[in-house]
Image 1 (cartoon, one colour):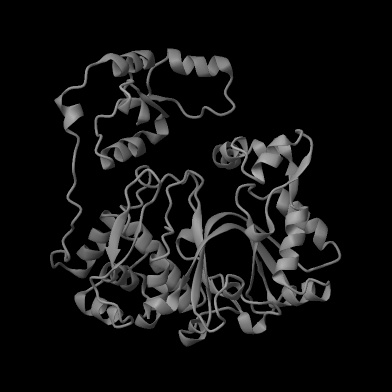
Image 2 (cartoon, rainbow, N blue to C red):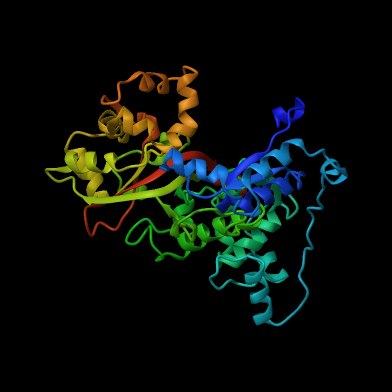
Length: 434
């Protein structure tokens, strides 16, 4: 954009699998005729000869010579279609036309309004019942979301969140939690090629008030509140930011089952440590929802056994370098760590940060580290700058203590733990949405 504004002609070059995505992004930004050219996928780990063949060969989308596309894109004068741009009418009808239940369900599927599981049809009566779960008016703006930084934000109201809550099968008493998640500013449906998802942890009195699960099966489909709140968060993220259509607004190469539902409560009463929201500065009497962007890797283990340090080190070595871990401990595990001398979550997080190491070569070879953190390192921002100074074979710390989150949940049937990639992006006060 800066080059274009300076009068320098440009052509955007992409790999062919992103053709639909980049064209839809250009359209969404009012530039439907942006000059673009495409080369085959992949480009990583290709030889110079293979990459040269891309340039000397045909554009896999237009089927014309790649260099011809490039040269014409740089030299062809802008025409009327290039200059007029495009504008959008973002309003949508409040109601769909009446039809049979089967036809309406199919309509929702055809328009990508569902997660491809059966939904509760959001009739006006059901939406009104959901709205009774909050004191806020239906037309109040809750927040805004977008699937990627390259798309514009979409605003949405309390009523639109209620529609998705109904579809997910949630109850009105769950609605303040769903509104808080919607207001977090963190979409649960990003469009990263890495198939990221979002996990949410609920703390405070509302957990017990609405019957959320923090015991047996807390992270599974065994509690109605957990399952439907998480599902509502994903559905509203899908529907209130411009869709989640594979190949268009969603590009996760493998996908992620956490996108169905990934919300649970912390077992505060059975934990030997301070709850998550208190760690973040809230009162124990506050009800909050913390959202974690990631969900890319999951490791698991038992303990703490005699070899717990070795197990943790192996897990850290296999973790995503850019995404710090969320450690979910059964209360048995938490009490075991207290017996080992870790009387606070912070002390154990410090040990993890001190020992989660990888060679500098492997660290800086990571895609997300290279893309997002390397520019900060070059600019002198710590701790990235110090890591960049390390020799390739030197071991460097991957995470800061404050990056690592510890949550206690589980039914105490086994001393099990999970390590899930996730960076806390926000903790929202649920009480504000009652």
